[in-house]
Image 1 (cartoon, one colour):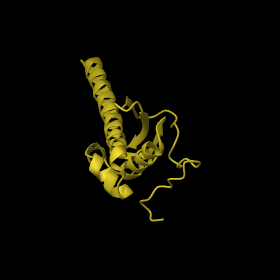
Image 2 (cartoon, helix red, strand yellow):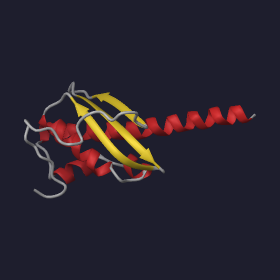
Image 3 (cartoon, rainbow, N blue to C red):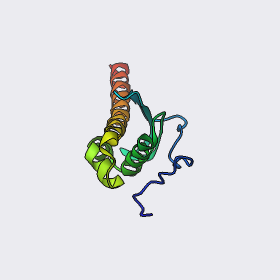
Image 4 (cartoon, rainbow, N blue to C red):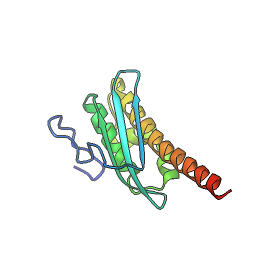
Length: 133
């Protein structure tokens, strides 16, 4: 198994599956298929230091979520926010046509978690600016 492959054994969840305590960024999206994916991010100095996820979806959702987390970890926020469905699919070596939407859900949810962090930092900055006035 190569470094970029995820264990697709449905009886074994990936090591990045589960919640992170006190996340810096977080998002939860339910896709049109009904699967829900959720990401938690730890961020230090504009870089994602740890990513975890959960999903209530199928095996394709699990491997897509795990791969998107792996692709984002260690990246700066701009790089992570540019992650696309095709990046996840390529890293996985593809998915069946009927499951390709799982990679889209993973990429979009991860990007939403980065946006959540950016929004929180902007609000915190705005509050600090108001206090200084």
